[in-house]
Image (tube, rainbow, N blue to C red; front, side, top):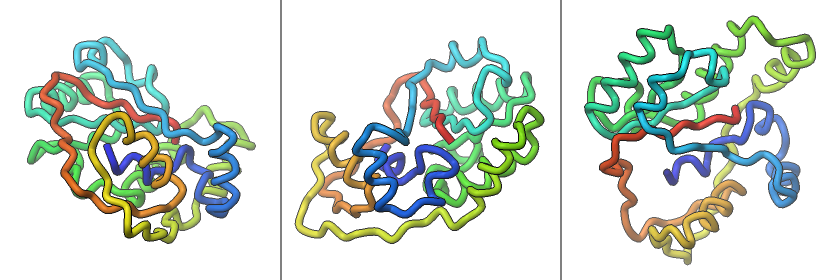
Length: 181
C-alpha cells in the first residue's frame, strides 16, 4: 500500500516538475485512484471493462490463481502484481519503471486513442523517477488514520522512515484495482 504513494496519478504527471504537480495535488488533481474489488466481481468483467492501464494486486494464492485464470479467459492485459511466488510480477519487483513500461506498451497497442491522446502518450516518455526528499526525523506509524497524510507527503516526494511493517496480505479474497495511468 505504501508504494502506491510513489506512483504517478496519470501517465503525463512525470513530464511536469515536482513543484508543478505539488500545486495540482493541493488543488485535488492527479489522485492515485484505487478500488478494493473482490475476485468474484472481477470475474464478471471483460478486459474491455477495465481501463488500458490497470494494475491488479493480489496477496493470496487462490486469488492470484483466479486472477491469472480470468486474464487467460478474457484475454486480459492488466498488470498483475502479487506476493504469491510464481504468479504475476513479484510485489517486491514492482516499481515506477515497471508501471511505466506496462502503461506505455498498453497505450502503444491501444487502438482507440485519438491524435491528442497519442501526443500525451508521447509526452510521457520521460524519466518517471523524481528525487526523494528525506524526511528523517519522522517515524511512520502504520495506522489507517494517519496513513493518508503520510501518503500525501510521499506523493510530494518526501521519504518517510518506517517504524513498523505494513502487511500486504490482508487475509481477504480480494484484489486491489489501481487505475488512473
